[in-house]
Length: 514
Image 1 (spheres, rainbow, N blue to C red):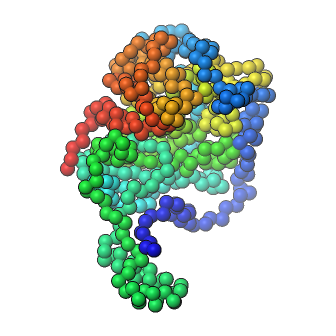
Image 2 (image 1 turned 45 degrees about the vertical axis):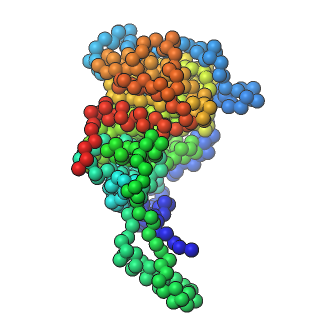
Image 3 (image 1 turned 90 degrees about the vertical axis):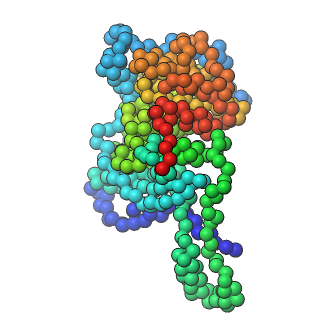
């Protein structure tokens, strides 16, 4: 059996720059709090004076608390907060009033009541390039870099945070190029391989090592002197089929002259309520539980994307003013949050994000406020969000109708930057649980701010209670605010063939070959 020379995906501690063992006197620091997800949620409920939460709806039709899918019952409070009315009742009619008065009000409510605040004392991130490799992805030559962003933990060395990221940039186009940051697991796409001379040296050393381990192997190697146990992987094919809309999104981006950056969310903050005292949230809190308006995982992942953008601003091959953000499902929520709060992101592709993303909080259809407040999802958001799933508490009972902001306003925080909302269809796995209709209503309502700021919205009216969602595969892509529902499942991949030309047009980017 031949052994192929490949890169191993799993990284050792030394590969992450953690090989040096430092003796830490833990008595000098507050002890790490260790909770289960249920204990952490209970701690937050105690802080807020909450005795009981409403149960989350079930996805099973056999359960008595089966999620509502009756459109007649989906809108208990159909009137959304008016984006263009300030808290003092003033009507917002100019961009200046939006930027100076209304936008800060909305951002403050989202920080306090939903996503939490990024602390002012978040430590510095230092990026280290672990690997720089010149590779080919299909026909496209690229430079690929594997980076680790070490968060300074001098003030609390009991927690290590090392952000894992890969950046891949095409080298056959005139730069600098736009880049799309995507949440996922970073891997080098096609590691370069040793030339035949180097491969021969590797085989000689490998044979010697194997013979030392098992002397009987010398007789076998002598019997087959021309045999090389280690061989090169097949070289990139320049006769491979051209990139199409069915190709992986990363290949479509590179073929269009874009770069991409893959960011591992778990290296920033694990997706688990049991570890809110670890990760970047735990590091800043020195291992202690959150306060009600502390940030949740969505805001933490968005912060990580901003730190990735910090690095990209130093990369000469990247146009830092043309960096976008993309995500699907919970990562779609995080991508929207990142774009809303960091105006350096030039555009966003928000895929199948549901509640906490583009779907209206006030809607009772499929996924509910109680779903996000459950022990399986509360860590995404600030503790204060639990108030809106409360059945019994010192302040009574609240629902999604009591939240002072909603997702149409989160989309409005992205204006006038290009924002593409993507969904699939329930029949293929993009479950109706995500409430595509609720997301479309929010996108319609957000359009008023895009127009106020001189951008184009979906091109229909902004009456979210009367506009009907367009048919599948008939996207609304003529403005800075865009919508398209593809006929696939819980992914945005089928929409990339429409997103990339739309985004390039919005950025006025034209691929120029060298």
